[in-house]
Length: 113
Length: 114
View 1 (tube, each protein chain N blue to C red):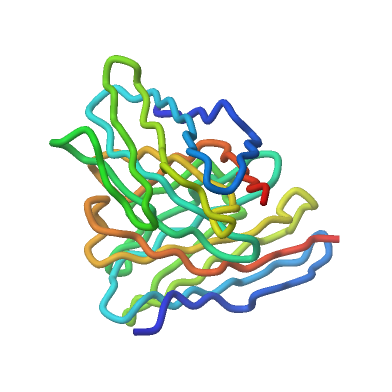
View 2 (tube, rainbow over the protein chains, first blue to last red):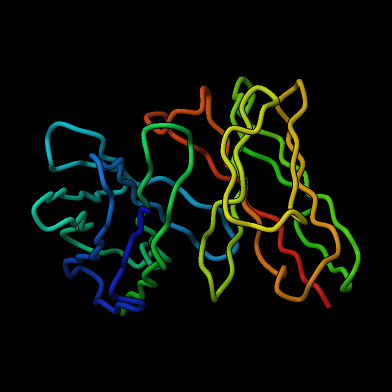
């Protein structure tokens, strides 16, 4: 069975500082990997996704993620965090057949002014 | 282009009652997936419909059911509500139901069971 672990439940960074959110997955085949963001009272918005090819993926809002098969990781990064990035971030893995996503527990990001 | 619409946005029910939630996907989308989000269990997949057929189902009891209509709108029903069913229920829509396409999530329906 597939699973996703986000080791950090909460992270606080200063505005302008760099950010890395960790994600580890367990999956028997080549995974489809995703990062979503959820602001309070809102649904999920897709930041980026990885299926194959270049292991460094660029997303919206200046985010990027790197797929490392040897470490079963798909960490999300941003070079300079803005106050508006404060939200909850979810890593997810999907399988080729069907449209089902398995989500990690989420990481809540707080941004200090 | 209108986004995914979920109605109602908020709902309060009592134990033992049943509830029906509605999801209207983005125009042209034929796939609708449902997720339950709770503080304890996180985001969990309920089921997915594509062209009126249930294609995948998560590990939830039979009290949770759904359907999709010919216009791609979807409903989910929870019978005999339990306190643990209190959650944010999210639906997501996509064109053909492939993960290579972007799924768009609605704002969710927040259900409180008393």
